[in-house]
Length: 214
Image (cartoon, rainbow, N blue to C red; front, side):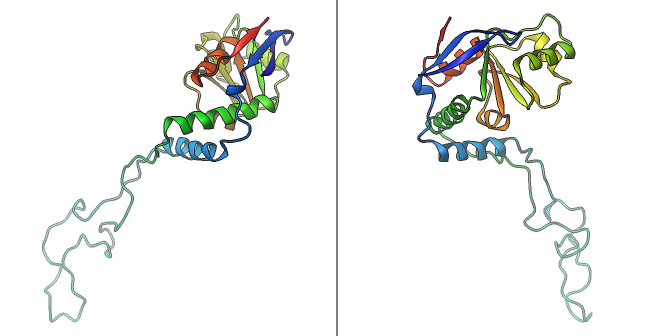
């Protein structure tokens, strides 16, 4: 059982959050993490690169010149890939790059990534992540109160409008719902800041009961 300190918006410790051992996989899952990250990054690729096949290049089926007697190489059509302005041989076409990772491997990878954050002291739990106003200044004061100086991922059970608005102009910060956060975001940001309710959602996603202690 791991214990995380719970802070309020002013950075004052107000309690503890107990993370079940089932949420922390420190001795296995490194290959699952790699597979999940590769698949997650592949899914983010647009996959819109496209070239023209010979059937898509404008032109007729007329031979550029007769087959024999000219002294030049044979040519059958102007859309040939060896001609300037012709088709592209074996060029890229729109496709989906994302690979498939089964649910248990994905869960193990997420548990290992989040467990490393917890054991490494890179997770901060805030009793309630909300702001009285949606201004950048209010969010910067929150970061200062929590002692956060590096890029951070803010995980909430639901997106709070003022937090989302106030964080838009702060570089290196991303605000996501706990139900939507993926392993790539967990590994990309050095610090994970979660509300108490958001941390509970993460525990439930992994089927591991997290319990908050006052």
